[in-house]
Image 1: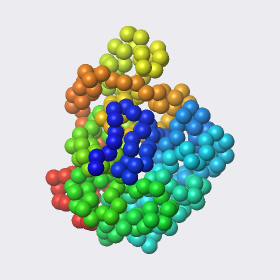
Image 2 (image 1 turned 135 degrees about the vertical axis):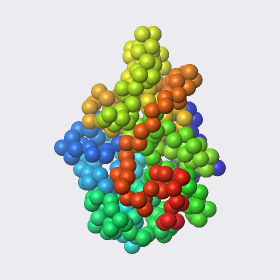
Image 3 (image 1 turned 45 degrees about the horizontal axis):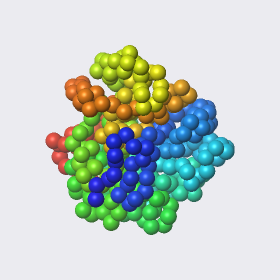
Image 4 (image 1 turned 90 degrees about the vertical axis):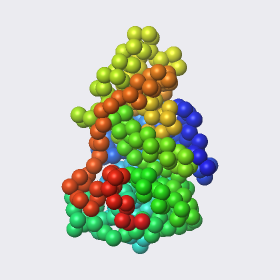
Length: 323
């Protein structure tokens, strides 16, 4: 069953029938002293989807901020968390999930993801990735524990992150409950068209982290995207939003949304939070222009020097040894 992801719609529908907002709030490296303001502001202007992870080390602050606000009831929020590489042993995975639920003060998670398709030894999650810290944990052993979390009502849906086609091809036939999401790095410099199509053909919603690029790899400075912005703004901005101007971030977000991809941009700036949530619709020609960008850059690759992990981001290398 293919996932339902109509162009630029407010929601994407999982294969299990549940829905997720197609624009969410990323919280990676969000500063604890800013989180209360960011969460409050985001909820006031309409964000309902909040993306979290144990690895980010700020779930307690996010939970406090959500608990303190009087704007949105828990039933209207969509909260995602992720189990990190050093907790993928089946006996540790449930404990990690329960810790996230406790810190986020949310009773259950709407979505729980396996953060990476390989494991590290317990307690090494924030150490540099080397051969010595790798742990021989089979993905399907971890996944069976994820399925139990659904059975027990601790999480509503389960999925994965940073999984390639090659891994999913081996994994999906073995699943009792198939992943509803694959969260990966996606932006115009790393479009991953084949992976997006494979996931959508197999009922997996794709979520884009780092959807605007980052630093020197920011797509916000790309001349094609800025050309679209300048032309639109000369013509009066976006007729669909009533705004007199549009931003490069809105163009990059719309490009992903219009190919059925959920995005989770991060910002602590109230103005940019509002801009990122304001949807625009690109023309077919504008989408084609962005698809024609030839710059290729992966922003997140934390282990380029570990030879045995080349398979994670290199499909031409050996198949995943942990499945």
